[in-house]
Amino acid sequence: MLIPSGKIEKLVSTDQSRPVLTHTHLSIKGEDAFLEATDSFALVRLPVTLDEHDTAGFIPVEAIVEARKTKAVGLTANDDVVRVEKGGRAVEWKREDVGSWPDSDRLIPEASETYICFDAGLLHDLALALGTKGVRVFVPESGSGVKPIRVEALDHPQDGRVGVCMPIREK
Image (cartoon, rainbow, N blue to C red; front, side, top):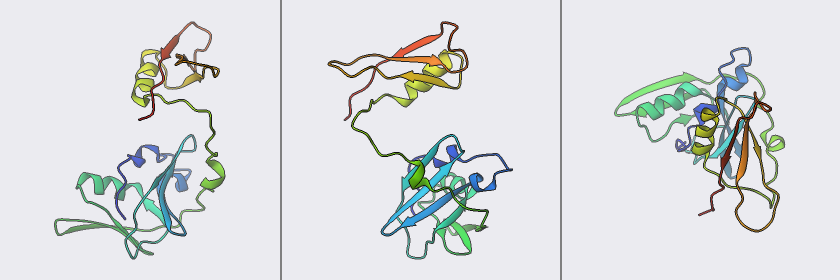
């Protein structure tokens, strides 16, 4: 399996009381394959290209991290082990069945025709400037023209902290 460019490991839970969420999961649906991760607050699904012997199941996040660290192009995920090879060196992890992966098809809503585009880095910086980790984003009502997006600190909604960011155009 080729390692996706997105840093999926950022959404793997560190809560050891929920072992299912401390792994990524390789899902194969017909001709399509996805690497998924969730920390129960957010979920990400990235399309991946499989190798001949790759099989669906849990993939330890350490394997993804090792593949990035060694700049390996991919990893092999067969029924028993996950293997990362680079320059004649191989590292393996036993594949574990740690439970049932959430039904991500049920969790991912359909795309709607109404949406906004904004720079995620800017939204992150705005949250830091507001002194919070969580933000409330107010989407402008539809109409003509580009309208600013109001952003408030989630943990201090009434104390006057407010930010504004402009939507960006799709490329």
